[in-house]
Image 1 (cartoon, helix red, strand yellow):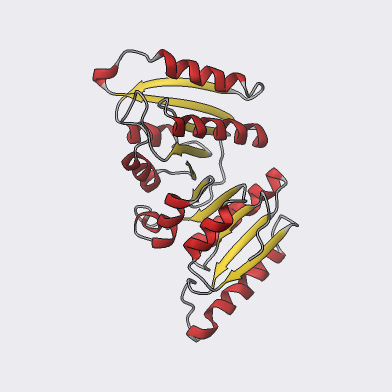
Image 2 (tube, one colour):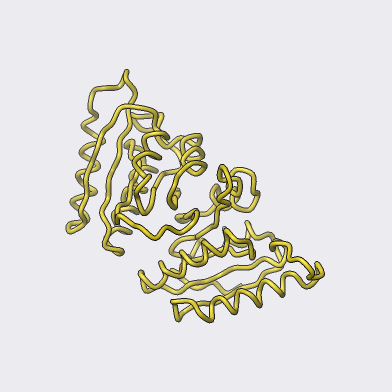
Amino acid sequence: MTTITDAILLGYGGSEHSKTALAWADELAVELSRPLQVLVSALHVAAVADVPKEYQAAHVADELDRILASAKTENSAVSTVLRSPGEALVDAAESAYLTVLGARTQGPLKSVLNGSVSQYVVRHASGPVMVVRELRSSRTGRIVVGVDGSEHSLRALEFALRHAKETSRSVLALQVYKQTENAADAQVEQAISRAFENFVGVQSEARRVQGDAPEEIIMAGRDADLLVIGTQGQGPIRTLLLGSVTQSVLEHAACPVAVIH
């Protein structure tokens, strides 16, 4: 498979949530002036009624070609592979700008928690992975990022600021602490300030709140365009950005979520 460098990479299987992710990735590719690369695994496509199993992959690929013919981006490519979609996406993600996955909208984010493909990609992709729910017509232009001082969370903050600069959005850097940790952490605040200084021109705000980390992050993201979280946290506020927090945010967030390794 030929991978396009710095492309928006999308895993597509023909399901409704992958079509939603495709629409979102198409808009983002235009906004960032980046190519869109869509990967289809012949081993993992949505079941199509009245289409024999051996022809379902070809049916999905043909449908995808029709969708891309009316897409907003003029620079797109489709790659069909005969291997595990998770492994193929993880390999392709090494040279992509970011990887986009769709999420089932009925109930918790089952495609991440129970779907082997999405779970594998979120855990193993070397670059940013964005998980998309349904598209929303109203947007506030805000990106919310959880920060606890760990290297993962600071990388998440840097990604959020860069993405905000490229898409003309604002950033809210959110710290969450427990009742027993009510003293402000100067090192975390200094790290956030330095990150803000590196992205002059981006409207940014730092906020420190007491409460449960996933609940506060999810609440702050209710009217956001994007939530950004790291994969784990080892900083002063250890409850933030642990695997369980990342998983909880992926389950319940009302907007797309970017997971940064």
